[in-house]
Amino acid sequence: MEVFGELIGARGQELLAQVREYDPADELATATRLRRDHPAPLVSAALEQARLRGRAAAKFAPDDAARMYFTPNGVEQATRASVAAHRAGRFRAAGVSRVADLCGGIGGDAVALARAGISVLAVDRDPLTCAVARANAEALGLADRIEVRCADVADVPTAGFDAVFVDPARRTGRGRTFDPEAYSPPLSWAVTAARTVPVAAVKVAPGIPHEAVPADAEAEWVSDRGDVKEAALWFGTAPGGVTATLLPSGAALSGTGRLPDPPVRAPGRYLYEPDGAVIRAHLVAAVAEQLGGGLIDPTIAYVTADEARPTPYATAYEITDVLPFNLKRLKALLRERAVGTLTVKKRGSAVEPEEVRRRVKVQGPKAATVFLTRVAGAPSMLIGQPADTA
Image (tube, one colour):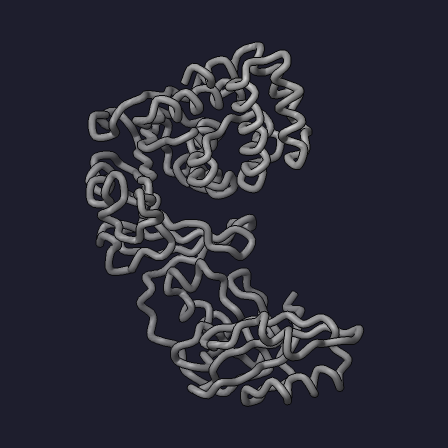
């Protein structure tokens, strides 16, 4: 705490400016040089902060990451800025003006909420984390909208707030936990807190079983550029609903996840790969219905159709070949077609893409995509390329 206080002071700012562009490969030489004029603990703190800011650039806008402060756990657990902005937008659209951000961490979500025009009380029990959150509010010019309180979230009354956001820690001393009751605080506590206000969201692991979702909650899965980043339980929105939200477009598919399973049919001209958020939300049937398609196998989330239709919820491929799985045959076919750039995707296959690339050894000017999967239960290879559905 004392060193962090020095780091955000004038002397620390001078050091941070000096290490902004330093090469981590030269850390020892840089540290030795800086320690001639600065205390060793302060130099170590500045160098660590430079490293953390570099890592944070993957989650935050570069300009923000360069001004913010982080802890190792804070970088690891912070919400990606695009996802936090989406969630803040949902709170704002619900008419929320004051949020209790419980388990606020370094303040990533508080920043997004404040930028959406919402007043935030950010609560965390770790003194250093709270100091970092305050420094971030100051650094980004949001201190007038963000109050940071160092306390146990169980001791913070939520009366008077329009909304609550809870982001429980999903790591224990043994690593990441997948048991919602092993969260800190447990999911049951977070849900109880969520029900005390008109609108609330509880961040959970994307792999949360649907049966663990309370009946009065809406479960939302969010992907960013095709990667599923998180799930959240919303209260006061659409009880019993499920939503898949795709960023950066903001396309959102909602339903109940209770449509009948799509029909299983032979592969058609087009194969659609649903976004991971759609799969997690159990909304593949809704996408298949939109596309007039079916599944190539009852247990595989690939949709096939005879027509190319635009959809933000799945990536389309035009299929040229449907073959039984055989790497020798694949190698010969790709050589015959002069394929030198091969994308390998798998779903329902034990074969790893790296093994396919190693054994096939493609060479040539053309590109292709191969899907290792099952068709009506049989190991198969589907070959094609991205389709134009515009």
